[in-house]
Image (tube, rainbow, N blue to C red; front, side, top):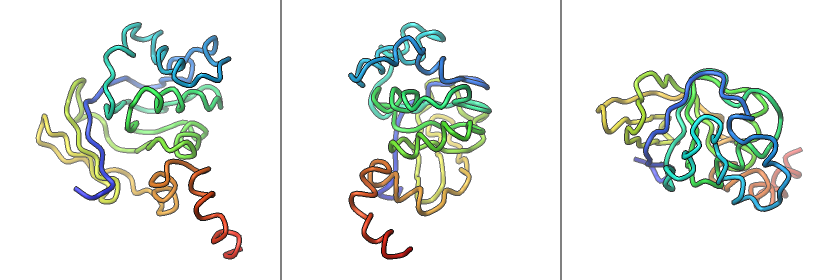
Length: 170
């Protein structure tokens, strides 16, 4: 495992999990971000927020985060303590919002991951190791700049630290 690794228990969802399933629109009118986490996935599982432990991982099928461009969806996931989202594919705007706020959105085949499986994710090597099933799963490679943004905790933190370098490069 590299220094850029995560460990957690899988919470599995299917295909087409839209942003309203992640956090219903009626809860997005707050500036208290921890409030968002208490309503995470409640239309799918009303007790979900009580089951999540820091470091856990959301695992899904295709088209995760479809629907709207609301940044509150990845923010609610991050605020719950979830360390990453693994899916076969993501809606483009959700994927970008997740990276921008420092939530790893990682593309891989999630068929070999079941609810409750213990996972180790090595972001540098691009590997998900399913400890429960003793299986290694390759992730789609992530561009270095996205890894750098995630390492800094999101785009704002990255730009605060590296903004001068980026200005000089252009």
